[in-house]
Length: 226
Figure 1 (spheres, rainbow, N blue to C red):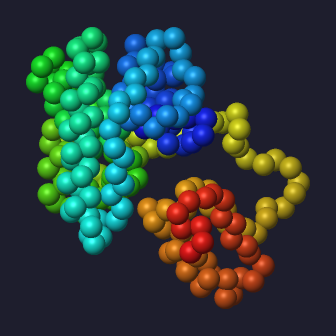
Figure 2 (cartoon, rainbow, N blue to C red; figure 1 turned 45 degrees about the horizontal axis):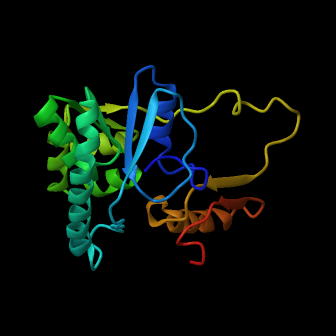
């Protein structure tokens, strides 16, 4: 995915890498009919038609079936991407999900491209718990992860840690005389990957002896009602 006006958080990593890169970037993304955020003149975005399949939790009732459907969707994506890839013959292919590894493998075999793969939250949760899925990590030349726990789980040499950054012009110490509010704030999609249920249970135990604290959850998603 690539960051859009309707959903700027999805694909934000590839958006910022393209925006601030001094090299020409060519973005291939699933066609979801979104209004993408503007990038610099050296970036081109191409949408590829396929069908979107969500995998859900590892070990779910239909997980194997969903994986097979995802492989089919990825194969279609790869075939339809080839005509675009031929026009650029990339030096580096940066994959923001292991799901599209086929595209990277094609570029590596045909054009000698280097493969970089970024492993983000959900992918890290799935791969970190599954030895078979970890075989995927042997293909890329370099893997980037935001999570030390994931790196310790997979124990593969070519994994590099890139921790989350922040905009220091927006976030910094509060030098006012106001006292810090007694509250915990969570910001993120309301999905199983974020662990909100565990957080609520933990806060419930904490609240038993700390009645002056509040838990504030900011976000929306599938689990809002739950």
